[in-house]
Length: 164
Image (cartoon, rainbow, N blue to C red; front, side, top):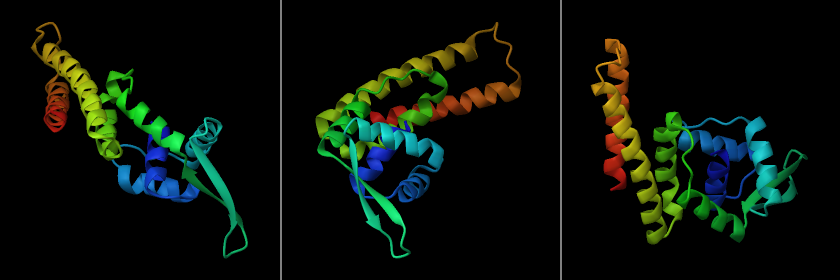
């Protein structure tokens, strides 16, 4: 997910690793707060894939700084990754769908439809599982546990409404 966030930020701005981190924290604070120790290897991987490139510049303070920018291939990679995102972990699904919706402004209309269809299918499956869990008499949830599941169910329904 951090690679998507980096590429999204770089699709909007050329930035140093510090600026990338700051912009991710500002724009996606409720979903992700990656450290420089997470961003740096992701940038190196993206550089190896030819998704990003950098230019070294001297700052006013006399320090050498790398300014990263997305490549044309990187933009294609971002769009492809967002459109065909594989949801592997249900416990992160609501968070990931939220991020994907937030970055969908880089997509063309047909790509957005593909993304929203993928999100809708996965949200419907999760919603059904939560409803089944709540209605199963053998699941002896405590009141607080039921409340949490119901809250997550409401989030899923709100995201479904957003992508439909």
